[in-house]
Image 1 (spheres, rainbow, N blue to C red):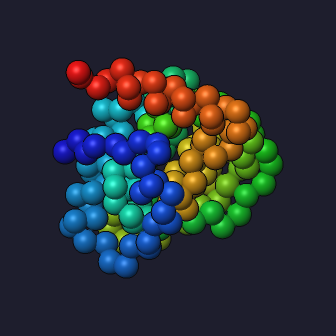
Image 2 (tube, one colour; image 1 turned 90 degrees about the vertical axis):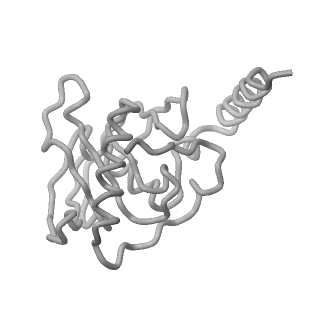
Length: 172
């Protein structure tokens, strides 16, 4: 089922997500819905808070991005970066911050620990777009958005653009 993606400035996006205590059928359904929603939105990742669920769960598939070959669809519960080094700069967009892009410097190589939808603990080495996507989605779990990395001017311009769009969308 495709879920509604909440967008900036919804305050739910700034809340820190809670750890998943037990992986249940409801969590597996959430992960499947998130994957379907991510693909429908043509994104490479999606975090549970983006669909108004305050749990530490993300889905990522960098294979959908041209020229990338990754591990396919990853469903990660309680993901945690356990090591990281190097640096990579990537122009990022976000399904919850539509029509906004920004270059962000992140760690170029990561080691991530997470649980699969079956409760198996996995350690995964990430680099390139996969490392960027993991950090971006974990930021969502911590209540952080890409717009938080923008200059005050760029944030203000984006807010004005949103207000103008909202005004134009109102039917009189």
